[in-house]
Length: 550
Ligand SMILES: NC(=O)C1=CN([C@@H]2O[C@H](COP(=O)(O)OP(=O)(O)OC[C@H]3O[C@@H](n4cnc5c(N)ncnc54)[C@H](OP(=O)(O)O)[C@@H]3O)[C@@H](O)[C@H]2O)C=CC1
Ligand SMILES: CC(=O)C(=O)O
Ligand SMILES: [Mg+2]
Image (cartoon, rainbow, N blue to C red; front, side, top):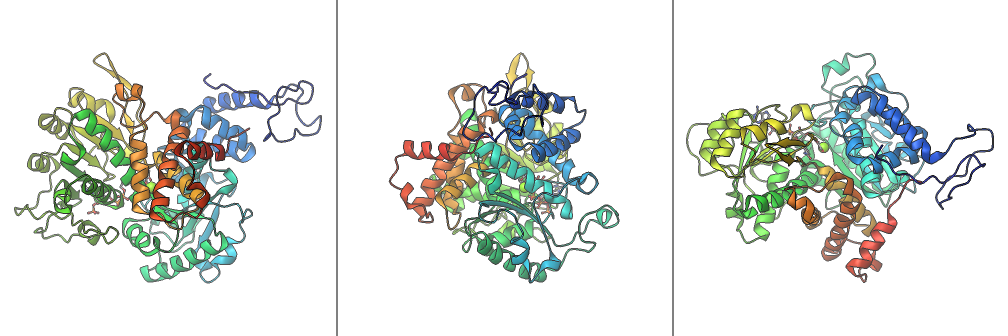
């Protein structure tokens, strides 16, 4: 049993410790005589562990959250590494796939295309109108690497918000999960009598634009203090709506910006282990969607801040999509977001100009041509990093950086153990979903989890506390740098690229402080009283604001 709990009340016979936040005990007789709330957390943990499969554990935890919020978050905080994979990736992928079958009680807000014209009135049905501070909004069109899941995407919003609470201490009552139902192109769901969403195909881009304009205007009116996180929109809409709304409202896109920040942070720490400055790396992206391009943009921005010109910075990056290496001369059309993204002041044209040969479609061939120092997988293609691919990376690099970042775990481009074996233990590894640690040739090896869950809780908390009017690139970059320098000496000694997940509150606090400072510098903060605080005072304030279960 790993949890350490402080009992705070019993059924009245044996008062132990009453904390200020503790709920009043129910009247005598409504609980068994020896019931102790804190011990109940241990009982809940045993119940959780008695479930056979991850999805059963996910269902159990979801019901526990509904029945006893404090015990749920106590378990999360005391057992982060055990519980995070159950409420988040990989299990949240199954929770989404099975949402319509497993549905018990509604959680969050559902807004459909049929509500167009009256979205404001639907939003005002939310019972905690004045309390909402952070909303994770998905349209279910690209849930993890699982594709269009329509209204079944709701658990991703719920799961991310549970991490806001557990990982950053955002008050549970301040979280607002939203799933937009704009139809689905998933025929299996449309044919399923249990499917809980609209029985229609996705609406046109024009209709979706009108809907999103109304939605954003109404949500920021109904909830004037709300930060909006866009989650798992399909890539074209992810870029389009970030560009459309980011200067008007406090909004960020987790898959583009959160992922960009977390991978930049991991690359900085991996570069230190490889003993090659980050800006000197040659980075090959296998997958050029919202996540791949988001990370590429973040890296280029960082490299330019570290002395490279835009040309030199983008020269460090190669993109591969389903048609192979992205280069100017190839016949297959190159989507706009892979060429020129308006969201940065520079124009990071990722399409290579220096390659003029025949299309390169084989990853191994591409590796032999590029000779990358780092290989990033954001493709949703399971096992794409084959033994020859990893061996080629290991041939060209003393310490190859290999980050298979696709989620959930069954879509990972490679697994931890095989990557160690094929690279003779030299790979520096981080994956999107967690792999267990292992011992390789007598040495303890701990895989990194390169997941935006290390960024969004702190980025969100800092934005909420500073009451920002928008989320700037500098705030996102600050979150990455804050995460990168949060490793302890012991963690560096173990060659970790990300800190241990059980320190998530500390890390989120650190990230939040960096984000608040960046917001102040950019002039987008509205909590001017925080400006005069020293860093120590600000850190203390951030931690004081964190909610704890009782
Ligand atoms: N670790 C983390 O924190 C995060 C991980 N992710 C994960 O990243 C993955 C991708 O997300 P996202 O970018 O939004 O999704 P997209 O579907 O937009 O992108 C997938 C990309 O992979 C490319 N691709 C598909 N098949 C192949 C193939 N056979 N060979 C080479 N490339 C291929 C696609 O090519 P084309 O453009 O030609 O279609 C596209 O560029 C998901 O699994 C998601 O879960 C996302 C966000 C955060
Ligand atoms: C982690 C995440 O945001 C994703 O896989 O989409
Ligand atoms: Mg996502």
